[in-house]
Amino acid sequence: MCLSGNKRHKTTIQGKDGEIIEENLPLPNPYVDLNFAISGHTIPLDHGYPLYAAICRQFPVIHHLTTLSIHPISGKPEFPQLLHLTENSQLRLRLPINQVPLIYRLAGKTLSLNQDKIRLNLPESQFITPSRHLYSRLVVIRGFDDPQPFLNAAQRQLNQRHITATLRLITRPQGEPIRRIITVKGKTLVGYGVKITDLSQEDSISLQEQGIGGKHKMGCGVFVPIKHRPKRK
Image 1 (cartoon, rainbow, N blue to C red):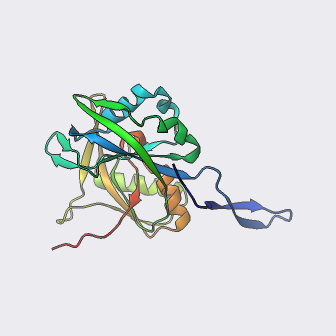
Image 2: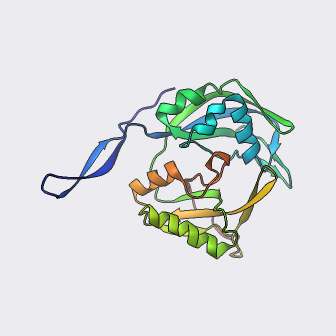
Image 3: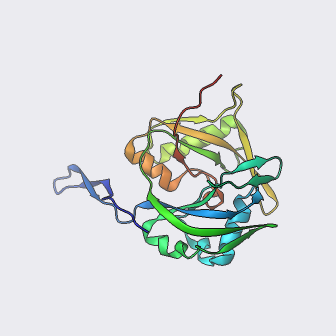
């Protein structure tokens, strides 16, 4: 694994005379995405919990890594239940760089997701980098199933972290919010796709590291840069 770059963050401290000083200090454990190429055919379309459970069976320590997030795996959906893997499908885990050795041992392992199996190849790593515009395919905030209360709850989480940005639900062309579900131990949780734009560099890194909502180890609340804005016909 090869990673480079001098990662720093802005820290506010109080001087001897009470003045506020901001310094750019070395970031001790910057976050990385650890990306495993996948060999396999299909996995469940709703794979957040089965994937997390499969990884935990290999390494129970995953239960205790509170800073870990697991991205949803991409592929070609066959509704209502299957996701066909492609050559671009990857298992992507986001975590502080000092925890990478705990996860790196997944290389070469076979994971069982219900009836489906995938094999993980050697991973590649990359630092997360700031982007003004981020999105998450699915954010879940327990107790907030309807669009407007959900949006208000998400905004409160940003406010509590002093993140200033524009928060929107991802919508269909007709303007309807895209509502998604995740099944965890037989219980259905409701969430929405979320887009957060006009972020500062510091807030963008913070949001990618910590996300919003819950179930980050099951693919929820994990934010990635918006590469381009789709053109509406």
